[in-house]
Image (cartoon, rainbow, N blue to C red):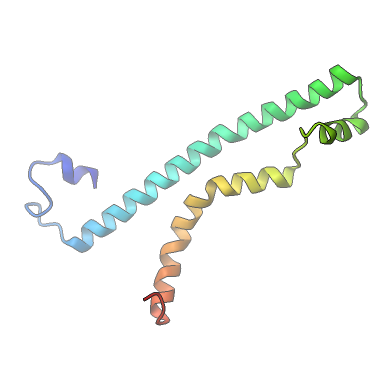
Length: 117
């Protein structure tokens, strides 16, 4: 859609139909959502790994805990996050990306079945 605004004239002069504009706008929206979702994930994953490592290091250095006691200490100090919790948080960040791919086909299916107003 960006190219339509950068070229001389407007969409009417370029003979672009409203249906084509709708497809381009949908594609641009999906691309933008995907880019931002992946950006959040790219920032979150390394940061979460570093913070998890630092919390474990703090548990070992500050309290001289054994590896068995480390998880207990982290839980007591609200610093423990399981792998499953990390996956859920990552899925929440990628939800806009996933919903874009699922939402349009699901909407067409609902419309085909006679729903969706």
